Length: 59
Image 1: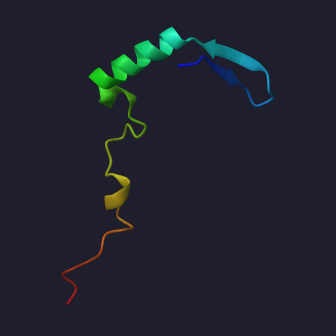
Image 2: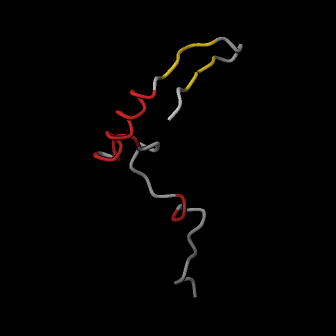
Image 3: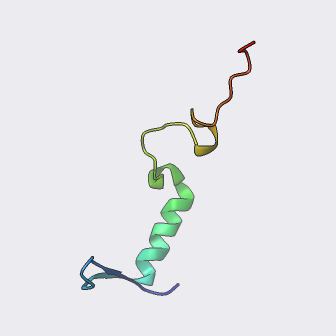
């Protein structure tokens, strides 16, 4: 892995994430993937959202 550089909206360098830190993060993610979920609300996945559901008993 390579180091990751994080910039702010004005283009200034905020921080540099080392490969060692990235390796530690990837190991943690393998052990506990729920810790790194983006949607922390526990809602339905995108494929089963209420907009995509069809009513089958409407007749």
